Length: 391
Image (tube, rainbow, N blue to C red):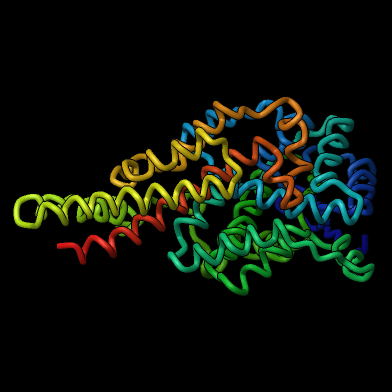
């Protein structure tokens, strides 16, 4: 690593040494070890939250994943987003030969060897993703999802010059910076807010000498807040950036408004319309929702029973905002085609390829959840278009 990747500043009574790392660089691993060993700090601050730290420490953490409980508790979408980011980093790591986050794990081990306190200074990943999601409009949400999932399956091979650049930068943050050109609001949440959050917790760290290990892309933002004002122009309060914003009024109303209108149409048709047309409308609703949700399940290579469940459940769940078709199909898929030990052991490897997502039973449950939900949503709008012309 170059000297520009290491900064030494005085923060009150504490001497702080900041190391900017690349998450898939052997050079970063070596530098982190050397600096912590040489400096013998009282405290080491690391760009991790508790969840990511546990994942790094426990190589077999996927084996403890209960996919049935994930889907049942409505956490499948969050897990898919997390896997999308992990998949991107892991695929880059495969090309550079270094497991993503290895330098952060090396920092933990080196700190323990020096009997230094370890401080996890990054914001909880769930808070970060939910803030990004809920502060983004509908069309930008679609862009965000498409960019994340396109990055998972991008098969572009990097040449030596590009690999060299990757080894010298924070790959995940680099991807988010690129994403920020398209979605400035998302970039502010995924990068800028985390810079502010980490700088705040570095200031709170105790010790005469403190070593900080963060991705290189975070160094400029963190240094600005440590060397100058803790809160820069445009920064929100720490309490605000560490909170999950409530759902927007529109996002609360729409899930209830659509089934409400559909039910009113059926009620109106029952009292004032042609009963034959009412039967046609009911049939159209069932077919549009059921068939498209079932097609989504089929595209995910779901079990035949899951596909049948999608056809039956979608027309009903589309009228109930509290439960989606994907929650039902995901639970059924997890029960009838439960992930094996082999599937759980190989999740991290399989999710780096398009084929792996479909062949691994764990990720296939998530695909069933996502694609059957998407099919049901499309079916609702298709059927709604038919309904308004039937009376």
